Amino acid sequence: MLKSATHTDCIEANGAAVKLSPTQTLAFMTRRYFAAPLPPCGGVVKLDADETHHLTKVMRVKVGETVTLFDGEGRQCDATVESIGRRDVICLSQPPAPTDHENARSLTLGIAMPKGDRSKDLIERLTELGVNRVVPLHCNRTQWPVTENAITKWQRVVIDACKQSGRNHLMEIAPPVRAAQWFGDSAHVENVMRIIADPSGAPSLGSPEARPLACAIGPEGGFDAMEMDAAKQLGWHPVSFGSRILRIETASIVAAIKLVM
Ligand code: SAM
Image (tube, rainbow, N blue to C red; front, side):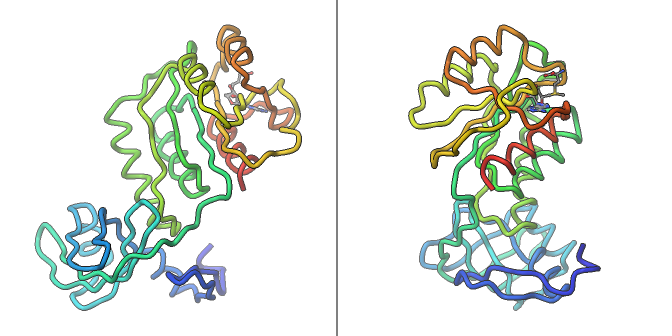
C-alpha cells in the first residue's frame, strides 16, 4: 500500500490532518513508542526493553532525534532522545496531550479465539479497527483453551498495532471467561446493547442506538443450543452478518466494522 500511495492523511498532535508523502508515512508509522506513564508536565522518560530494542536496533534512531511517545490511555507527546544505553533509552518529553482516534461508540467483543497465529493476526486487526476490549470466551465447543502466555503475547501485539496505526488507547484483553458466565455478567451491565453473532439471526441491528455494544462470536462449531438459549433469555440479540458462514476472524472483523465504524 505504501509503495503505490502518493500521499496519506496523518493526524498531528494538535488534531489537524496533514498530507504525508510515502516516505513521511513510513516515518510516522515507525517513530511512535509506547511509554507509560508519561510525566504530566513533561520530563525524563525511560523506554522499556522492547521499545529500546525497536528504537535502537530496528529504527536506528540516534541521540538528538525527535520521536512520539504515547501512554496507551489516550495521550501522546513529542520527545527528544537524550541517551541510548544497552538496555534502555532516555528521552526528554514535552507535556503529553490527549489525542483521541477512538470510535464514537465503544465495542467489547467476546470471542472464542482461534488457534495460534490466527488469534495473533485477529488481535492486530481489532486493535487497528478501534475495538475497545476483547474477552476470550471459553465455550462448550471450545477446542483449545487460551493460556496466560498467549495473552501476554497478544498484549505486545496490541502495543505494536497501536504504534503502527496511530492509536493512543491500548485495546484491553480481559482474562478468559466461560461464555455462559460472560452472557450473565454482561446482562447486569446497564445501558449495553448485547449482540450474539449468529448466521441464523436477524439481518440487522435495526436502528442503532448510541450506546456501548457487546458482541459474542462463537467457536468453529458455533455456540451450542444451551449457550444460545441462555444468551437469548439474558437479553442478547442474535444478529446475522450475511448468509455465508464466516470464520471466527472474519465474523469478528465484520462485527467491528458494521457495529461501530
Ligand atoms: N457451524 C457454526 C454455526 O453455524 O454457527 C459455524 C461457526 S463460525 C465458524 C464461528 C462463529 O462466527 C459463529 O459462532 C458466529 O458467532 C460467527 N458467525 C459466522 N458466520 C456468521 C454470520 N454469517 N453471521 C453472524 N455471525 C457469524
